[in-house]
Amino acid sequence: MPFVGLVSDPRWEPPEGNGDGDKDRSNRMWRIPWSLIFWVLLLVGLMLLVPIVGHAISEFVGYLLLCFNVALGFWRFDRWCAKQYWAGLRDYQA
Image (cartoon, rainbow, N blue to C red; front, side, top):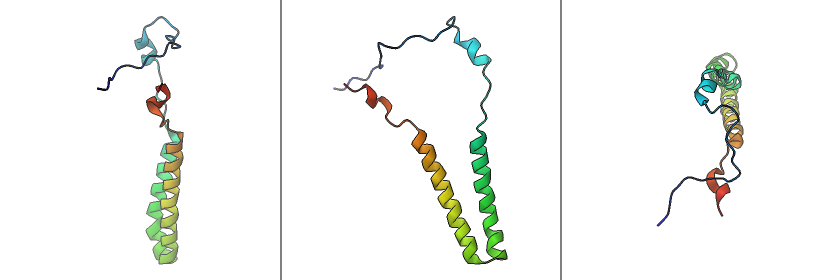
């Protein structure tokens, strides 16, 4: 029968300070993810540009722009996933 419990690390030390975490939380500033906003606006802008390019230049160039846009989106998603910590609690296995 598996046992599920808290993982404790004997090397862990409490954070510095007076122990009142609510004061620290109220003084925090929100971090705006500017790079995420930029990439989303760029991808949406490129998607909106696809039909304009398709009618103005040619359908094939519009299709190539669409393929480029999808590849760019998948590339950015892959880079985001590469930064995540996927090991989880496997580090604590005996």
